[in-house]
Image 1: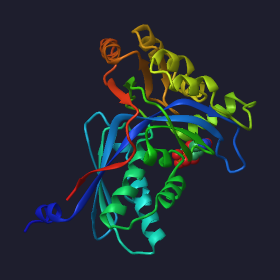
Image 2 (image 1 turned 90 degrees about the vertical axis):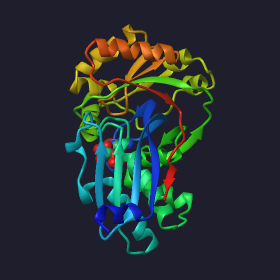
Image 3 (image 1 turned 120 degrees about the horizontal axis):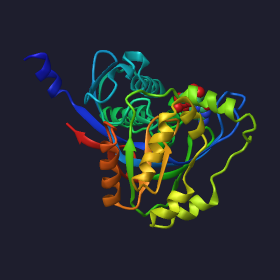
Image 4 (image 1 turned 90 degrees about the horizontal axis):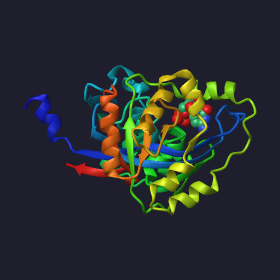
Length: 311
Ligand code: C5P
């Protein structure tokens, strides 16, 4: 039997995890540990990665993706967050095991859509199911928080409030379907660099931040115009200052009919909230005609990490 057939016959679990946008990202001045206090509202989008795990002789990670994803930005081996997730899980259970992890990637890397965080959350759940570890939700959330600020939300999904440095997640009610146009940039933007620039631009940032009441009210309204008026991102000025073309892109999307455009998280992906699917399709076409190479339509919210295949 050849190696490929051998691999195909090894039990595997595939878990899906979604990209996120921040409907509001309130950022305060850095805490003593260097992290910024956040008051954010996350929402998952229908754009996702699939993570497949199989038991293997040592930790390994493989990337499968289209050409429009920057492969070079995907960390190899031990540096990859999915391997860190796996190592954390086996250490938690005091077992010695390793896995080969395949990431089927659609979420842009270093895009402000928390793609790496989604992969880490998916790896935790996939390995837990593969090895039947029955880790409690509480322990999974704690490990997720140790891996990164956005990882707990990727587990939970939907629409949720994020506090602390982003890792304290509380689900929110959002019955409506929100239509988004998503414009990734081939070149990523470093999250720490954007936070550093935010510090330079906002020396008077408050110690405590909160989510505006109008956003909470808008989430109860299925009309996307109310939500559009309440969107906000404190990192946006810093991201646009580092990449001025993002400001032009936001203007172009709004001119094309989007209710509101904003930088997603620390950028450089920009997202545009639209009235409905038809409007989102029209904005997408206008941006493509305007020269943007990759423009997607996605809806939110969708569910958090979940198993899509078991063999
Ligand atoms: O937690 P995570 O690994 O996603 O954070 C990446 C980087 O983003 C941190 O090292 C830090 O520079 C910055 N960050 C921050 N405050 C937060 C979240 C992230 O300064 N609340």
